[in-house]
Image (cartoon, rainbow, N blue to C red; front, side):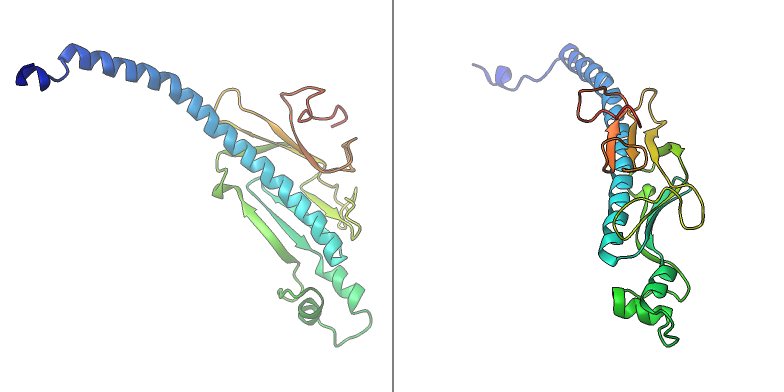
Length: 210
């Protein structure tokens, strides 16, 4: 075999055919990848809301005080416990028991005097900037009692958050996931996340009463 045959490269026609195949495969893959990224943001947002609600419930039981989960303008959420309730429970008529002192000694957390104490907060721009929350039902806040039960009405008289959907406008047919606050609208009891596109008997389908 000659040296010229060993060093032979691609012809122009072969190169063009290879580029055409690559472009065709990329054209098929890009929409699928865009859909994957969009639905990933939807799942991230829904799972974040679900974890926030469950955190509020767990903190209410752990601290033996009402704890709120608050959605703030559909861009972030936070979990706070009600310091006024905590002070009334633990301080009583003791005038020396101040807001900051009882927080330090009872729950080992320091907060500004007269303010609710933020346990955790999350901004959707960190992991799901293009996800949107829709179909919010009941309000934007849900308060859990010291027994971990959601209150139908918050302490300020407002209606409690019952459910919220996470979706996105990045694609034409996005996935929509629903977070349901257990005990308020769900026949299954616990707080859960479900997929509106699925139907029974799929375990991820939303209950009919939601």
